[in-house]
Structures are given as structure tokens and as C-alpha cells.
Length: 358
Figure (cartoon, one colour):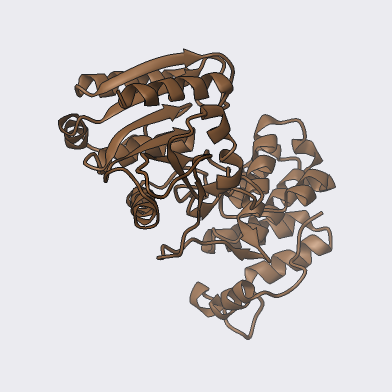
């Protein structure tokens, strides 16, 4: 069945106040009102005629686009129906459950583009709260990071610092388990929490980078992300006996991508880094930054699972080759398994870290 809003929210109220700007007056009904009355009466021909006029005037009205899709489906025009449904989803339609069960759209069932539209509608729903579109505003905030000290920690001694960067949708608490796998007890560890809630984790995990509605990473958030890593390192150095001003970075997946970027933006602060199951974010760094890494003697270990279907191993190989071309001391190692920070990965990281301290 066609869809009507269960209540009048603020966004709908604002839209109603803008009706005169679209060529309507309070003395007569809008095309949308005529179309809605027609569809309720089962007159799909008339409803389609007036919804067409309305969405031409306001192509951002997801509800009207959806109702027009229902009209076309009832009039045995499945391709037109699918086109309108796709347009509705593109501008924010998010009721995937209603769409999947709507008998008016039964002619679209089984189509690959219908399934894709349902998936996108479900994603839209995750980006909305209480029927209001979710937006992100850049701001300074108090961040959280988890600290893990050596088993025989002595505040009178100096320790090298390792910043661990969790994967997309992860948490510092979950990623802290990898410290035991790395099994290097003579380091200080700090694990920063990603600055943004991960849109694809039901609010339980975090992302180091801001996301667009398409789940693509916003490169405009890179600078604040790498600054946050360095701020954590600086804060650790105020609170704990860190050996020197340089630190190491170990990242997994998106955390590995951020490890690459931290070294590129702060080569004078990063002694070296390990990136497992990661990738380079294209356009987020320059050739000059890579030259600065070489000048600062930054070294890197890149590892990647042979069966990784989340981030293909080609991404790790590409990053390795790019660093080598810039003259950076980089080592690549393929590991068994899929997209996971495994015991084998941790052992290679441990071995690499020990080699840096010789």
C-alpha cells in the first residue's frame, strides 16, 4: 500500500510552510494533496498524474516518490515503478520493512535492483533517529583512550610507546586483547577510541574517520584523525615515562589506513608503524609527505591475510610498492587467514618491533 506519515514532524511542517514558493496558495489543494486523495480512492491514473507534477516541483519528497512507484506498479509499469523507488531511496526513503511487504510493489519482487533498493533503504534507516536526518558536525571533544602498562611496570624506567589503532566498528577495549598476542611486555600501549560512531555497527563501535551517507570515508576528516593520534601520544608522555618523543603505531584495517596517514603527516614523531589488513586512502597524502617519511627514516611493516575478502591483499601489496618507490624502508608479509588480527600477525609485529630496538 502507499505510505502516509504517522505524524507531522518538524521537517514536514517546514515543508508545508514552503508550499507557496512552489506555486500553490492556501485557497486550493496542492498537487500532492490531490494525488494522495486519488490514491486513497484507488484512482492510480489520476494519482500518478498529480504525483508526477509534484515530484517534478519537489524531487526531494521521498514519500511522494514512493507513492508514485506504487502507482506505476499498480498500472503495470514495473520499470517506471523501479525508477521512482530508486529515486525515493536516493533522497532518504528508509522504511525497508514496509517496502518489502507492500503488495503494491509485488511486481518488483525478485529484481536485483529491488533488492539493492531495500538494502539502501535499510542503510538510510541507520542514519536516522526519530525520523530526523542524522548529520555530523566537526567539533573539539574530550577523547578516550585505553592504557596498558607492562606487567612489571616501574615508573622510574623509560618505555617505548606503541599506539594501537582499532578497526572500523571496533573499540579500544576489544582491540586491547591483541596486546597479549603481541606479547611485548616492555612497552607502554595506548589505544585511542575512534572519534565517530561507526554507522554500520549499530552504535556499538567507532570509526576513526567521518563517513558520508554512502559509507565512504571523508578525507576532510583525515587531519583531525591523525592529530588525535598524536594528541594521545603527547598525553601519554605527560602521564607516563615514555622513552623519547617518537612512538610506534600498530593498526588493523581502517586503523592500518590511519597508521599510514599518521606516519605521512607526522614523520618526525613516528619511529615506525605496522599496518595489517589495511589500505591507502587515495588523495589523502602527497608524494612530498612520503619523501618526508624517508627523510625521517620512518620504517614500516605491512602484513595482509591471504584469504582477506574484506580488504583484498592487493591493497597491501600496492601500499608496499608505493612506499618502496618513495625509498621508505618497508617489509611485506602475507599471513594465513582472513580479515583478522591473528596470533601469526601479532608474532610478526612482535618480531619486527624487537628488530627496531636493536
